[in-house]
Image (tube, rainbow, N blue to C red):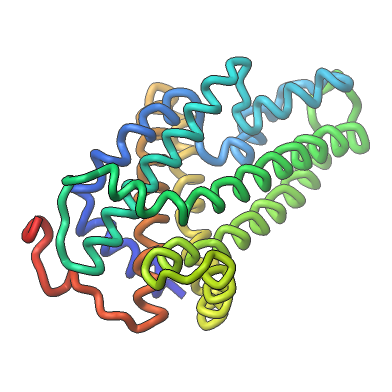
Length: 279
C-alpha cells in the first residue's frame, strides 16, 4: 500500500536541498494568505460560529472554507506562482531522472518544457475546485438549514452529516488528482499527443490504481495533522502553512515523476550519478 509513498518520499528527501528553495517562493505566498485543507479544518475552526441566512451565510462559509478573498489579485497570483514553479520543479526533475544531471541553468527552458504538460491539468483542477467549493459550501448551509436553524450555532448532527458528505467529496477530488498524476511525465517523456497521453496515463494507473490513490491521499493525512497542530498553537500557523504547501509541491511532483518510471520500468539515471554532478 505504501509502495509509491515510499518511492516518492525517498526521491523528495534525496533532492530536498535542491528543490526546496524553488518550492519555497510560492509556498511562502500561499502560506501567508491561506492554508491547505481549510475546507476540512473549517469544521474545527467554526464549530461555535453561527451561520446566517442566505445569501450572506453561503458567502461567509465559502470564504471560510476555501480562503476566497476580497482581493482577486491574491487568487490570480496564487494560480500564477503555482503554475510557474511547479512547471520548473517538474522540468528539473524530468531532466534529473532522465539524464542524472541537475542544475538551475536555463530555468525558462525547464518551465517551457513542462508548461504545456501542466497547464491543461491546472485548468481542469481549477474548474473542479470551483465546483467543489460551491457544492461543499452549499452542503454546509443546507445541512445547517435542515438540522439546525440560521442564526444559531451548528449542531452535532448538522456537522456530522456535512462532514461525512464533504470528506466523501474530498476523496473523489483526490481520485481525480490520481488519474491526472501520470499525464505530465507521459506527455513530456514519450512525446505523445495530449489525448494519447491521457489515455496511456489511465492504462498505466490501472496497474496499481489503489496504491496510487493512497499515495495521493497520504500527504493530505499528513497536512491534516499539521493543520490541527497549527490550530492548537496559533503562532505556528503561518510557518506550518508554508511547510505544508512546500511539502505538497515537492511530494506530488516527486510522486508524478517516480510513479511513471516505476510503472513503465524505465531506467532512472539519477541512480547512476550523484546529484549535482554533470550540471
